[in-house]
Length: 178
Image (cartoon, rainbow, N blue to C red; front, side, top):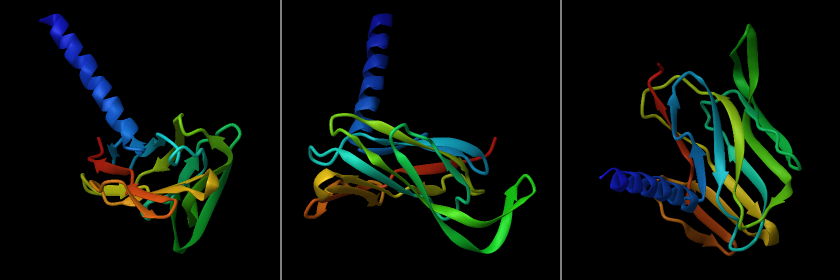
């Protein structure tokens, strides 16, 4: 009986890993406490129909005001910012006058047959448990191909235009702050 339970546990873990790998662009963790600091990663599970990935663009949800991207050897990181209508408290006695809208990793390649993680350290917003924060992600690949991970949850992947595929955006859900 113990052996059967062990095999079942290994099988469940393997299936979960396979499901994440086939989901293409996945955020980890998938849930986190509201109004907390959190490290998240966007896992890119493959390239674009055989082409290597050469740029990842992650659009931050509007309610996230601060973010720090993970340094990745060989990749250049660019922050796209926008001015806030009014300054807001930024913690530690500072006031924020702008927020990061997008984080862009470029200047290197990720072969189609490999996966990688692109990390962010975030201050999550206050909010009710279950609030969904979509992290719209664009994955550009060699030869002009791309994946746009911007569709609603539960949407199946499909070809949108020549060379552009579309699938569901990675979503982080807020849970109650502990």
